[in-house]
Length: 438
Ligand code: GUN
Ligand code: ZN
Image (cartoon, rainbow, N blue to C red):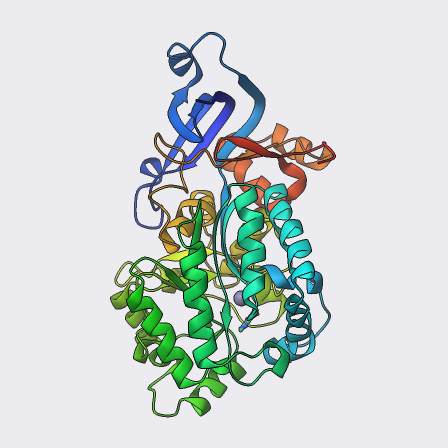
């Protein structure tokens, strides 16, 4: 049995602040203690109250003034795209052809896949991200590489082989049948092994034949608890092309719906240009959305409407994703900052509690993992980020005048990034320590 305890300020979302009173949505302790046993939270609360329950000799790591949060959860990210982050110009369809497809072809080489997978997992940890839903490439070896790298660190990772049999260069295309067979073999090999969860991953309607989408639906019916991830309605030219390719379908959402891919286990990236009827269908089916603001700004895709998507009359569950390499940062703090600015452009000021919720428990709900991660409470995994409000001279100056935890956390999400992640704990083990070489 392995035990330790973390002492510091505790802040954890526990309920959805889009629909509940703010005071019911967060747990806060100005001097708190988290007791961890065998990778899980055993108890959490006020320092003095919890300390009294613990053995005298327990290892207590004290982070004075730093904030202990649930590890961030990235609801949408592409590990094969790290080398093309920040590539100049172009909008979605040209960006895919010019940068994305060539870099993804490099993952036909397992050595390249292993090297980038290890880099990627370490970079998540450096940013305080402890779980992610990850797109691989069409090469099955790219899935083995990322699950192996995640498993070595005991990370909760959702990932899947990109299914894409049309309209891309031959070296990254599969066929409908091969994508089904390969996905099936990968599910058998990886799903629920350690903390790995398999995610059926048709790239999007533009690179899949009808038969491939049909087979993705078959996989979802054959395996009751695998997830599904894809893209929808990110860019107007993409929406027009989907209509050309699938003229019998009422709209883009109906393409996926027709093949049984709108499901409570499914999460779609972007969803910027959906009609009212399409959002209603998301609500009815329980399908989820990953909001990826840094990517939407960078590729020039449009302004996601968070208030409309979360309309209490027909709410859709939304998680927050970086979408690296279309997205421009691994930092979920920076992603929250850009989500805030995007909503501002629509006249909505997302609250601090809503922002931290989206990056933790909201993403956990969107990925169907909120029974084990996303908040700090007994029985949940000890996946924890330690946020240092004095990480840089500017942050220290700003933090010193903050009059509440809300004000402090807001300034941090706007101004901070990976420099403020002092440590990251994955299942109770310290996986990242700032200022160390490893
Ligand atoms: N739509 C289909 N594939 C992709 C991708 O790799 N990135 C983004 N941002 N959108 C996509
Ligand atoms: Zn994406």
